[in-house]
Image (cartoon, rainbow, N blue to C red; front, side, top):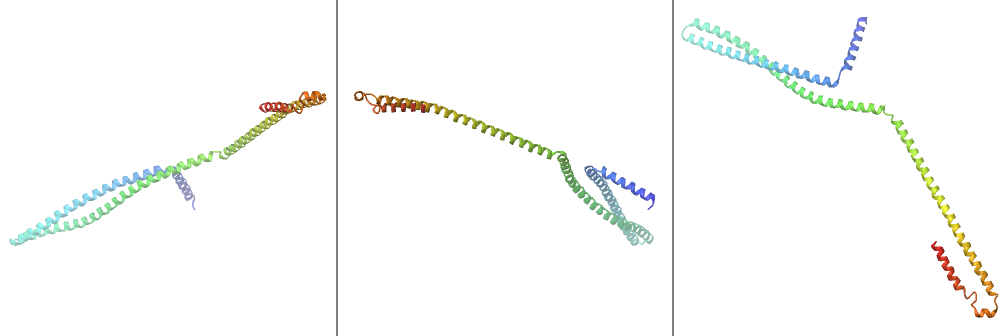
Length: 261
């Protein structure tokens, strides 16, 4: 491979790469439709020109055919009148117009075929343009969706999601620790209050029991001293056992007061 061939290939490769990078799909689609519409305008003009040429040829053919028939009739008239020279001249004119008509007829057939071909091409191009417009809108919508998806993916890619989720996990762990400490503090506070209340109850109950025991001891002591009195006095005064209902009533009253405390 020659040096110039290699250089040429490198240049063409670089140009193709530049063109590929510079191509904007949306702009290319719009330009393609615009080019097709321009082609459609030119094709319509070509069809109109071909039809006009066909009509003009048709008119010329009709005139040549009419003149050929006319000179045919004149030749017959001259021959009837016995003027062969004039009849021969009329046949020469008739032949000339007949040849012209034949040539025009051949051209007219070709033009008719060309017009029909141009009309089919025109209809096909119009259909392609309509299809291209529909496809263009669809492709542009797909391009927009793809660009939006690409932008979203790039945005998601730049987010430090893992670090953010790790931060959320750490904060959740701290919240759980704070809640656990708060619960433990509440239990300790409740336990201390119950303990203090239990001891206060025991202390209060102990005072009452001590006082009750002291009162019982005093009452028991009074019974013993009364039991040592003379018998005469025992008949005159009720014994300790006889006065026990009063003591029991007082004891019950004391108990009732204690229960109300």
